[in-house]
Amino acid sequence: MDTKEKVFSILKDLACAEEITEQSSLQEDVGLDSLNMVTLLIELEDAFGITLDESSMNPFDLVTVADVIDLVDRYTGDSHA
Image 1 (spheres, helix red, strand yellow):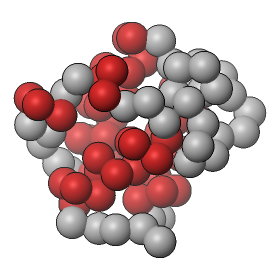
Image 2 (image 1 turned 135 degrees about the vertical axis):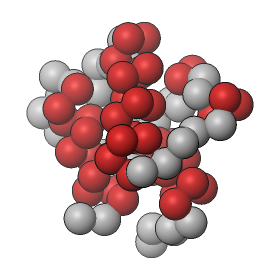
Image 3 (image 1 turned 60 degrees about the vertical axis):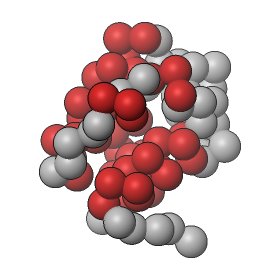
């Protein structure tokens, strides 16, 4: 499972959205509230075996699904096409 698929899987577990795309807004389209956003960061750390820096832990910096994928890519060294 690649980064994008893992992120989508985590978001589907947290969200009430039927369809999630990279352009989906985390709050409006996916339906994440502030608690879900914090949970998302914790789930990302667990799923990818990463430890996010405090500067990356601001959930309000993440607006779209693509932002989440980019965040994980920065920590794992991956880049998706």
